[in-house]
Length: 377
Image (cartoon, rainbow, N blue to C red; front, top):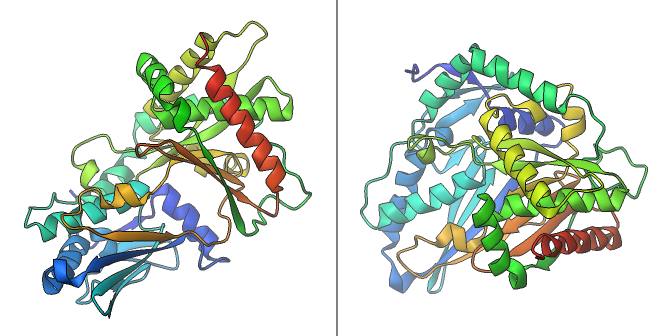
């Protein structure tokens, strides 16, 4: 069990953000607005619910030192912290709650959890206890186990020899680390989703894992190679206790596919299934985030499930309007956000310093091409 006021190193992804914040202070800052009709709510109860939800998650009461160590320091004002702020604005018949978070606090699953807790608290339901501090303690203990060592060895054996592409070739000579403004391109794959779900069920894949395979095949086609890799965002929660934690528990796991001259669709689907299974099983060790291999993986395509309005408000007991501010500096070369809330929308977020829009359109067309090709009988 943790000591409530012990200090712990930041979790791997939070550490990455912390290091980037030293020269880009506003990186990974998200702004979310929640608008509610005042006639339909009890304003005091809503504000109380926000505070109850925030206090249920220890990360909102942590402070990170200049050395990147986090420790628990609860304060009277839970609405403002080192990496978050919540404000209320009442205009006419509307109340707007303005949330501002830095992703150093938690992953995309965490933000869905927070809004779920706000709505649970408003409905008078009990919140599940967030054992974040216990998790930090256990994680530090696991670093000294044979499992951690074996996971590191497995990754080094399977990904140590870099002879594969991890992104479509960039269009400029700019250093990979000099991200520009973020640009986006959106593709709608809803038309192929029903067939895709049948294949996903057959091979025990999620839609984002299926898109990962399509993305890897697209990288091969784009670059003219017979092997490629990318990272896939795994939520990293493996127990019921961990499902209640707001924190950066997610893991960007690497997946690699080799396409041989006689490779059949079944071979490729079995490869991605096996890669996902084994990479997840060994993901305790944060291979892609640690030196020296992060020099490669920091600039790999990353496939993730996006934060969507529908996911954030799915438990709302009253009608709400929600908007997410996505105007920001690019935080990666190329992310593929998979939004699977009914429709299947793929959002390509890319650094405009490194890619032309025409190149991303071409790459997206290749992702669609292989997403459809894998469905063919």
